[in-house]
Image (tube, rainbow over all chains, first blue to last red; front, side, top):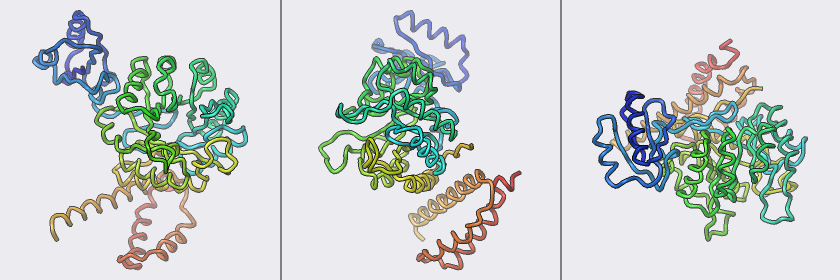
Length: 344
Length: 77
């Protein structure tokens, strides 16, 4: 249950209410919201509690969000949250473009792609060092060396970097190489021990939707991160598995407007993994921004036919230039703005 | 003009203004006037086939350019 107190309620009153609820055996969490106190009551709440709380003069409302969502629920914030990833702010009325190679394929390669990502006006550099592949015989990524090469490319171009973490034991390497944003891939969305471990890392986490996950399950995975102490969470829709075979997955844009009502977290869309076909990524990206996404994540390769992973869904650098330009138009058309490109 | 048409025009005007503002924001991140600007406008006019007259479009762009000069970093410094 989420209890929103009247703006201006003194700390003394909030604490008294919190203590009284805790005496009744409830676990009380507090929102980081500054404009008003907001309390979240975890677990089973006694029958009639919402009605009793609503009668208090300091309580504006007491409501139950979807499932057992609390910290990521929309009611926990006055406004949708904005997440800083390095020098890039995600959410809050600007649109970002995340781009880079599916896999880091070598120092020169990732640096070259990073320069083109930067030149196109994209904002964050993505690149896989630990690759969750369907077959064990496919390229698995360069591991820690890949992280190093990605970070170096990010530093050379002043782009914050995003990379997927698959195993909690790799976390020290991600921290050591100062990876700006930890990505939890679709296959690990409900790997709760991984979520708990990275929640404490003090870094932004980009949480992709599992390929067979409902929105409720996805948001509860985000709740694991928030409950574990992660204050910067980005959600990323990347397509779900359906009976449709025309595309790799089905990009579920239908949930975006609803997600705005259910969570305050920024929403990104990865049309590449949904489509699996490079030429349909630009229209899907436009659709994602039109549907309210705070940004899109795409893959870029100078020679997709030679890419070590996911070549068919990689854009050429010139196509990325177009995609960023179109994203700007779509952002403006929906009353927002494209995030400023970083200098340097 | 019926109310729906008036409503559509208001939305289009809002979109035009949003695009102009976004264009200004982009210009404010650039450091110099674009020497290829004239060619770009010529190209747009060449491809243009809408009901708005070419002279009218050229005039609109001239006004946009005149009012946009202040936004580039070169002009701000």
